[in-house]
Image 1 (tube, helix red, strand yellow):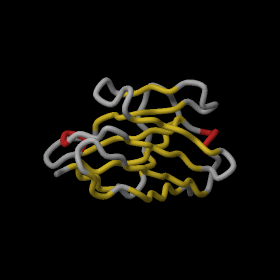
Image 2 (cartoon, helix red, strand yellow; image 1 turned 90 degrees about the horizontal axis):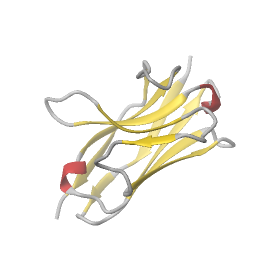
Image 3 (cartoon, one colour; image 1 turned 120 degrees about the vertical axis):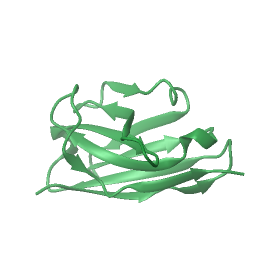
Amino acid sequence: QSQLVQSGGGLAPPGGSLRLSCKVAGARISKWTMGWYRQTPGTERDFVAKMSRSGRRVEYAPSVEGRFTLSADYTNNSIYLQMDSLRPDDTGVYFCNAAEDWDTRGDIWGQGSPVSVSS
C-alpha cells in the first residue's frame, strides 16, 4: 500500500518562504498526478498545485501562481512545494495527494503539514 510522508512547513513572516516535501513509499510518483491541497478550519481542502505523471504539465491555483513552485525528484520519489512571497491567507494545513487522473482528486493523502504566515 502506498504512503505519502510529508515534511517541512512551520511559521514564516509575510513575504517569507517555506518548503514542503512529500516522499512516496510503495509506488513511483510517475504513476500518478501529484498535487498539493490546503485546508483551513471549517473548510474543505482546496487545490493549490498539481503535476502530471511526466512532470511536463504543472497547474497552480490563481492565488499562488507566480509565488509557489511545484517540483519533483523522480530519483528520490518525492515532490516539493516551494512557497515564496508568503501571505497570511496562505496559512493552513497543506496535504500532499496522489491521483490516478489529471482531473480528479485522489484518495491517497499525506499526513498534513501546518503552515502559518504571521508577523
